[in-house]
Image (cartoon, rainbow, N blue to C red; front, top):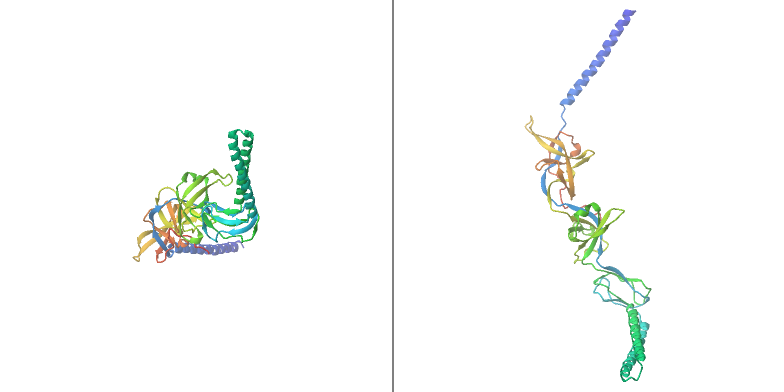
Length: 377
């Protein structure tokens, strides 16, 4: 009985040993096969890294506003008697915009002028009589006071009449009129907008950390969606002396010449502030840089010499780089890459460190330093 059990155990041991041995042999064969199996080359596009001048800039957004701008309105109530402008007209300071009916006020002015003239006659007459000592000095003084009071009354009435005339307070460009002849206007009712368009201002904000890089007279450029890639040149004309306590931002004002009146108050724009002198940096298409949790990576292609088939063996290896500013489709590399190195610009998703590659540069990603996002409108 014991002998049979021993024989059975030996048989079972041989069977299990054979199974485990075969499995180990199979695993060794698979591992050897995989070790000798080479990944097929991946097709990528490349660019040779080269240095180019980069101008350091600060970016912000803001809106345009007129140096002088106002919605013109009447100081007093009245009926529109005359409209002295056309829609979109240019006017000079003092030009009549709207005249309100002021017949009653003018008649009262004439009455006050007559009273003033009479008071002057009385004063002139008594001034002669005082020399002959025929009247008291107090009478002359009273005549003078009456005359001056009449003058003040005339001036006050004239000032009131002037309020019935709405005039341009500065040179500018009128908008669309909001009133009609015969219309009754309440005090403060807007009749038209007047905007001074040349030059025009642009207000924007910057973090307080940028204050040391900003100064009055500094060059700026602006773009607006209405004109695509067209840029407008201006200069910083004022920097606020107050930092916002909530955002810690500072307000800056730039002024732009606007003779062609393309820029209008209220337009939203992007502004670029030129800072310092240009510097040389390696420039790459933004598609060449891969961002991962450990840092920014590029793939650099190196030539390992000719293989057994006589063809060059190209391999892509990772390099960590430090990047700087972006412009258009390009990004600057400040550290980790040398000019002359061949960098992969597309196809990185298929690569691992040491992957063999084939270069095909028939199609390249965009590399325009002045590119702007397409206008969705």
